[in-house]
Image 1 (spheres, rainbow, N blue to C red):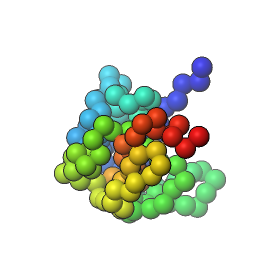
Image 2: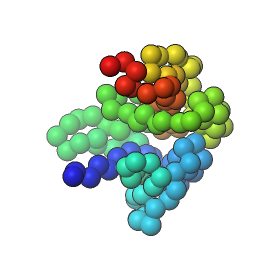
Image 3: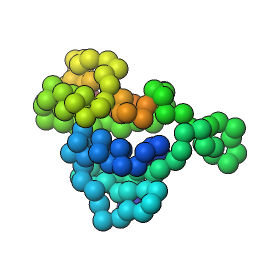
Image 4: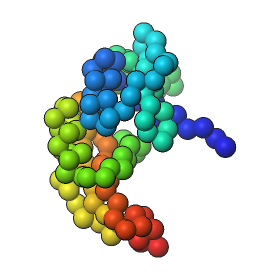
Length: 134
C-alpha cells in the first residue's frame, strides 16, 4: 500500500501548529524540526513546512509563494460529525468562511480558508455519504 502524507507550506510554523490543532483538533506528532512539524489525528499525517513569503515556489518556476487567499486545485476535505460546530470552531481559531453551508445529495459542506490562504472544506455526510449519489 502507498503511504500518503499531506504537506502544507506555511510562512509561520508555530502559528500554523496553533491553527490546525485548534481548528481541526489535530495533534503534534513526534517529528519536528526548525522548519517543519508533523500533525497527527487525520487519516494521513500532515506535515507543515515553513516556507517564507515570496520565496521560489519551485526550482523550475518563476512563481513565488503568496499566502494571501488563493485558489489551488488541491485542497483538504475534512469530514466532521457536526458541521455548524466545526465551522464555528474553525472560525474561532482564525479561519475565514468563503462560502456558507451548502446542502448536497451526500450531505452538507462549508468552504473555508486557513490563515495562510489555503482553502479547505468541512463535510458532514448524510446516510451513506458519497455513496448516496451512486
